[in-house]
Amino acid sequence: MHPLRIVILLLLLYILYRLLTGERRRPAAERPAASPPEHHDVLVEDPVCHAYVPKGQAVVLREGEVFRYFCSEHCREAFCAHRGEEA
Image 1 (cartoon, rainbow, N blue to C red):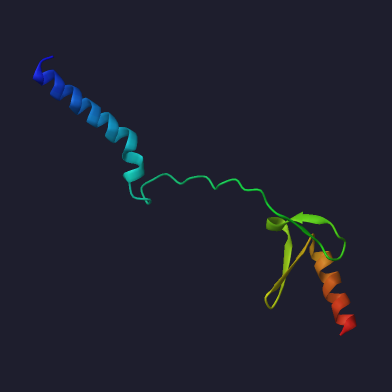
Image 2 (cartoon, rainbow, N blue to C red; image 1 turned 90 degrees about the vertical axis):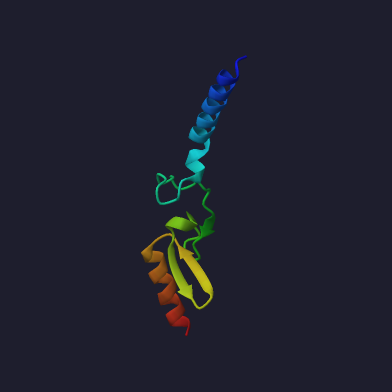
């Protein structure tokens, strides 16, 4: 094989390599936004009606370091009202 053909072949292989790996080297601001990763949401139990709700969709009540999760605002309000009667 002629040396010029080898140089041209190597140059073409290098260009192909750069095209295939160039996306990873581009700064994050220039890359297209990736879709959020799929994850399986954890189910939490509502303390009032005992329904299971995905944690990401639950209504949250924070009491200091404790988080309580509810299926709806109605259950959250019922929980707060019941705790107010006990106090």
